[in-house]
Image 1 (cartoon, rainbow, N blue to C red):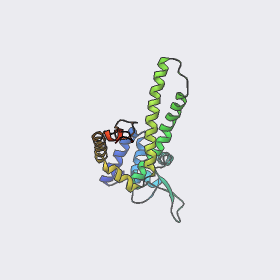
Image 2 (cartoon, rainbow, N blue to C red):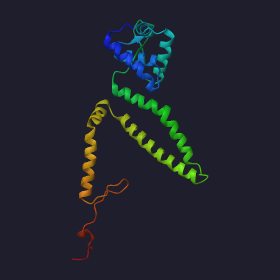
Image 3 (cartoon, helix red, strand yellow):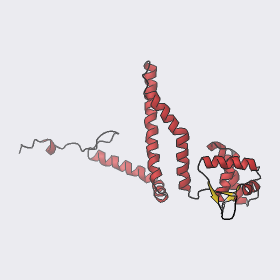
Image 4 (cartoon, rainbow, N blue to C red):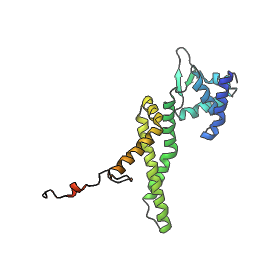
Length: 206
């Protein structure tokens, strides 16, 4: 590789991690190189830098484009195609979430919806269908959350993630307040204070 040691270490690591994320080593290294590059690169520059064949680079770029992780750029007075990775890590996160949803989550939801419309043929199928119903509800809850995340700008999303444990403490405090005032605290219950003696007394009594 024709890279400085620091950059080379990053690119090699991304290549090794690629298989764990469902992409091959070549694609991982191409993406890492484009992400840290100070300027857009064309396929020949990528091939020369990483010592890959031109055909492997072309296939890798097509895969990254299919994931919307790189964009094609044309420079003035240059007929070659250049490629660049988004620099905003939150945009990358949103893109990955969207693409994984289309490829992995949406087909599962579709299968579960079809299964839930079937009439169980016996007790075993009834139990299986009920567990599928629980999985469907969970996945829909997660996708609804992802939909909300997609609407946030990067600054808002970063602020939300930084809150971390503060959100949990806030929820714990909410439950303590509910308990102190006799309010419902279990999922699905209505948050209404328990009636007091005064409230139970008929309006016409004095």
